[in-house]
Length: 424
Image 1 (cartoon, rainbow, N blue to C red):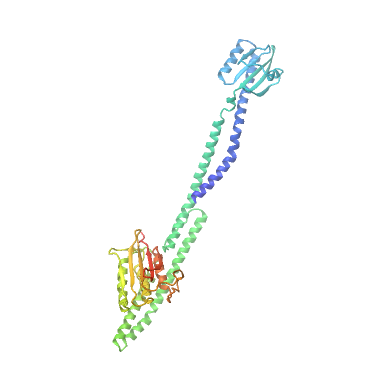
Image 2: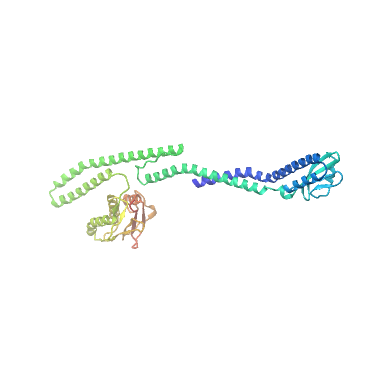
């Protein structure tokens, strides 16, 4: 914005400068010429007074000689008897006309001459002051250079002023853009400083109000989820009592384990609902992956399949919470174990990225996705709801990465979660 405003002001100022200074630059030669002619006219009038006072004689010769020594203009006095005093010159027709009492000025081959007649007792003399051609252009280039420097200075001053104005506008706008980016990343506690022009102040106030409104809505939603989760405890308790009343010990134990799993899921849901909304969190993805693969390996063994795990020995920190990453991996493993033929192996691979974070890939040896581009929330093309993939996608996006769907080398489905590095 600063650059565009500076260019706009420079262009506008340049047009104004050109509109005013170019005509002045074209008038400079005429001004220099008029100045030289005025000076020569004044010289001619002064010499005419001296001629009238001194008359013919040596004193006039000396005085005219001093005039010619002190000026680049050449002064000549044509006497009535045909003699000349001062600079040597031949009488021209214009001199003869001036001898009749008509003052004039005209262009000649040698420059520009100014003629002034003087009436004396000896007759009518003519004072001639010749301006050399170079005197007619004196100061022209200097004046043009001054005008050019003045125009350039005006443009620079205008650009500096425009830059300061643009900085006053752009700085709060940059801060506002940065704050909105942070709000978009989930940092809803960011407050924008309301400074700058009135419009920017109003926009910052609206963004702050919107941020607080979003926080209030999220808090209300989390409270609602937590309340609903608490309400589930009553039926869970009833299920536990029913399971303990079963006569078959194996059935009672199996149902009790299911109730325990359901209760843990409800507890996790409550904790997740109470968790702050800030995204400034990190977890060792390698440890979470190993833990969840171990958990799902029991079910894989029952189905006669193997989960191949490939994780680095060093920690792989990523910008996501442990429960979120576990839920995303659980969703992917559950899909792989539920919608592929029994016996099909599953491959889980975690590899760190050079820029930080890591790539978590879950691939199976099933039939793969029918249409990768058509997979969306509520429909996965395999008969499932597609919510598991949506959970995984949202986890990857929240970390600053993305989810990539592809076909595995075995022909099955491949889901890669690109998890961003922890925020500093």
